Length: 428
Image (cartoon, rainbow, N blue to C red):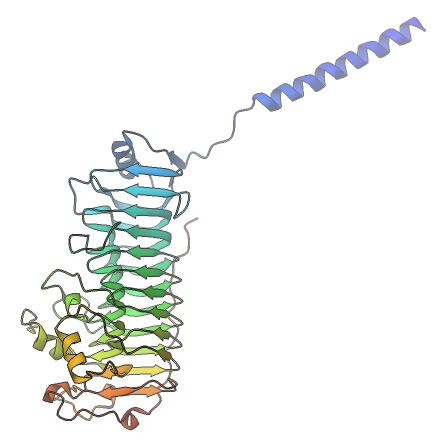
């Protein structure tokens, strides 16, 4: 009996020791870290730390910025990288503050960075453009903000979010405020989606310029000079941009004064503009809601008209076609008051002079056609099913001599543009 008790005691002791050992192993095991993720916190030397990471980071790796405000004095740049993620803790939690910037033309600049993902942070008070991405294929900005704090002014940077010369661009749930040119701008690029974004108090809220195959949808543009601009200009690598769908957007009281620098193309946008199509080709505008864009809720404008108002604009590009072609405007909703914006540029003053009682029609077409092909069906402007929206063909080329409110010549249908597909698949 004593031997049995001794044996039982020995077994229980072993079990206890074994169990206690397991508990100790569990509590002392260090946490597993991902060697491909680099975490950064606010610090006094964050400028050098983060710039070094952007230089040494290898393809497929991630930089994570923790919650807080990071202060910088120079551009942060990255070049010749693939499959990089640059992520904060939230658009309203991680702030990259460049108010003290003393060098560099941008806050963030990424060049030749294919399949780059920028997520969940806000850039404040850049000394120049806030986020510029060039010469890249596969560009995603998700819940990224750019803002110049205080009263918007000409001294602010020109562009907030600024991909140019890129392919496969996705901007989703982004925010821009205070840019002296365009808050959200995509230029000379192909295969683009701008969706669920918000732009406030910029000269141009959202601008797509000299691009092929773009979609702008589910966005809100409020209190900009002009809400959404689709422009095509001469002298650029991509010209005669084509195939843009603008739909399901909300344009609210875009009547902010135009504070662009003189000589900038957007300085010609009148305060009170909802959507402006300038020399655009193959554009479909539908299911948008326009509220109190009281000068030119939707304007269809040809380049020669801008030349008339801006003597600095030249036309020496033989491959550039300076006329609007193949535009379809349908199933939009318009409402407005008769109060014009208080501060106005030359085009706005002219429109207000033609319609002095505050009753400028919702849809304005300058009426200019290509003199070399006056009967070319590709120049067709079709306007249909826009509720009670008023229309005017201004006959601007003849100084409004033939101005007409008759929409009948434009009551036509066009085949819908095909959906634009983009490839921004995360790297494995």
